[in-house]
Image 1 (tube, rainbow, N blue to C red):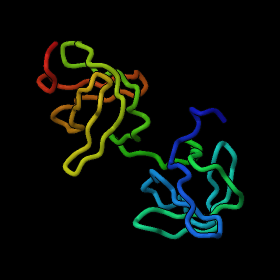
Image 2 (image 1 turned 90 degrees about the horizontal axis):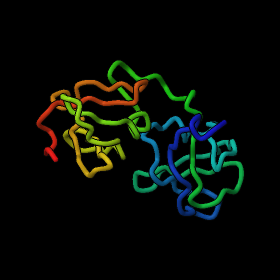
Image 3 (image 1 turned 180 degrees about the vertical axis):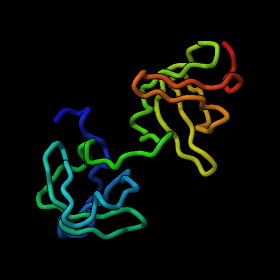
Length: 156
């Protein structure tokens, strides 16, 4: 399985208690990955989640072996539930080239920032575009591009 076939769902955080449990840093909001009996990848090795509890709204899990702090916690991409129409996972948008109506390139997506009112596309150029219908016209993951309406960026 290559890096492209896996999706990051968190990182091994600080120890929690004396039984080998640890906090999951940057945990996915999908609780199924951390329930007892789940099989996840840590550092590229499949492990089983033995127990789960929460500390300050963050999952604390114990697995069937010792792992290094900071190690990536991943799941196979094929294990992700399908998205609905016009829904995308953040990782699908990162790296897509953003074009303004008229053809001007605004640069690639660096990150998806989640906000209270709406999410936003953070571009490598520093531009932040709201992920709303008035701004984003089309997202074509297969073609590697996003088309946005004019007027949401300052011209060069």
